[in-house]
Amino acid sequence: MSQSPYTPFTPAPSAPPAQLVSTRWLLALVTVSLGGYLLVLSLAGQFIQLFTGMRIELSYGAMLVLQLLFAVAVVLLGLFFAPTSLARRSIAGAIVAVVVLFTVILQAVRLTTGLGSATVFIGFTFADAFVMLPLALGAAWLVVRARPGVAYAALALVVIPALVHWALLVNGVDSVTTQIVMLILGALVAAGIGWGGAIAARVLGGSSAAPRPQPQPQYAPYTQQPVYEEQNDRPAERGPVI
Image (cartoon, rainbow, N blue to C red; front, side, top):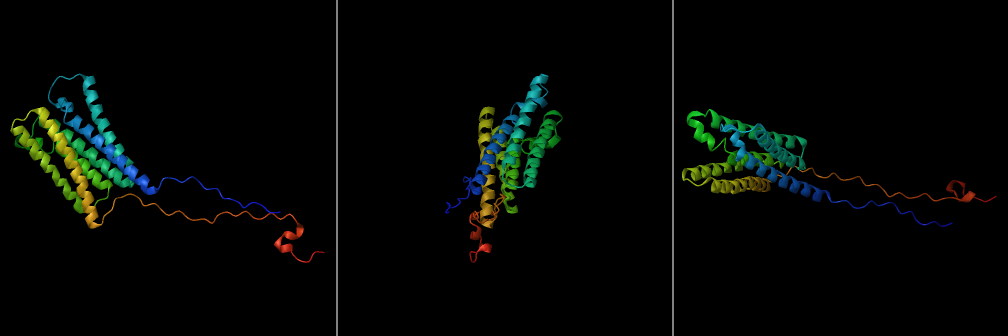
């Protein structure tokens, strides 16, 4: 009796691993950029009112703190999306958290007790959100992308917003124009750090930390054993029929 050949089950094709990795990198980039924008709005905006001695209601102050924490959480979420090792994501997240905390502390000291002759210098460098945030986000992105060590030289680009911010204030540019210029410049500097890392990796042969997909083991297709209905059909029983 003839039987139809067995057709093994073929699962539906899934998305290629390379496409999934690219999608996760894009999602991480967009989320980190959004979080960075929220951080700039917070640290360079109304959050500093907490340290100016202004009379602020408790609920309003709590809202400003929550806005800052939410912005940090968005950045950390974006770093978590990156398809790299947990260690690199943790280091990058720690960099952002430490730099944000450091900037907040220096802003508070500068606006309350002052830092003596270094107050002006600190105000345009370590306490300036337009300088420290591109530095933090750029360094974190270089970490998750596993860029070579020479790529971190691109972090020196943060000197540009420090000098420009100082020049704008010295020349009496209004605060609104200053905020717009510094926001655009900070975004360009952060992007420049990322591109600098990419160029360094391409020149030096470095690569991102995305895990390479492991080859799946190949199995031979399942073949159904023939069904023997007659007694002498089995191979071991073939022979003269009695």
